Length: 397
Ligand code: GDP
Ligand code: MN
Image (tube, rainbow, N blue to C red; front, side, top):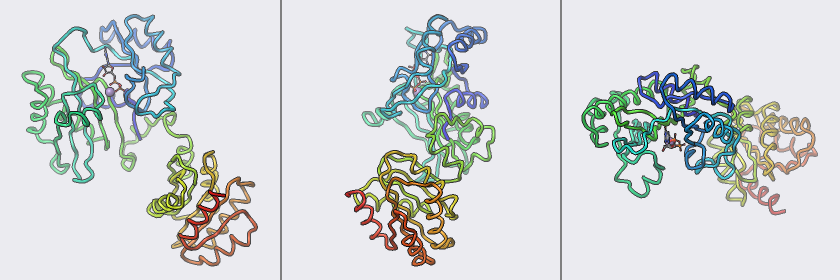
């Protein structure tokens, strides 16, 4: 699960980190009210209108705009709310903007004493340690910095068993070229950011840019947070921050039925029990000349109701030209799965694409017979190779 910038910043604030203050708004009128409120609390006379979508690079796509008057706040909020924002991270189809953050302007034009840094904390799965990744080149596309000037990106590995050490936070501040008060502020910022990342079980906490103001304060101007979903149950207050408008509607629907479904952009839908088998099945689809349209793990209980739900979800994707069902009958018997498929098929009525069912394991032969005798437009196979050939046949027909 991902969080919005405004949600990430509120979390940072509870950990004692200075942020660019802001108020979220869902209409231009509310945006103006928010701007007035911010003037009361922060004294700002300029505001930044920031699209709240789960994608970075908003500035580049026109989703971050400065407003120098309340009229401009109204105008910019009107333009941004409802817009289809296309950034390097959204893909060409873009993302619809449902709300904006009205933030205080924290940049003072013409001042040379400000600086923008990049700081993130994330998990290094290879070493099983957390990494603080940071750079003097903040405010820019960090992927581009990594490609063109990799020596400007620094890393500090933190052993989760001992936590962040004081000397490590000081090394970060030193490498960022800071001294005096800014140095002290940065060591606090790093310690608190690490604490925030660790305490909420995030898998990524990225602040780009981190701003050093002319009066040597260190503040978070942006916040990107990815949560470790397996630990979300420990943070019900963060789980509540989920914004399903930002997620793929088919995946949300699948989640309601406890199906592990990830939409992909190919033409062969697949329904499999077990994640490993699902990965192998996707490889097989590629070998047979197709492209997987989805990853779908129905789990251990492939009964009629679940199979039916999975069919409906897979079929809601108009790109699907064939469906491959690949079930290994270990705990679940193949004849029961086969009956489930036949029942689900009948319940749905007409399924417009060919279905190839490969059943292997307990009672595989009985399962195949049920499929073959059903009179439905379903092809059966026991060997993986046969199933791949069938997929190839129906695609090239
Ligand atoms: P992103 O493009 O999605 O990463 O969104 P950011 O929150 O990082 O904002 C993009 C850019 O907008 C920043 O790199 C800044 O250059 C600019 N920006 C953000 N806040 C302010 C502000 O308070 N004043 C001004 N003038 N520019 C800002
Ligand atoms: Mn940013």
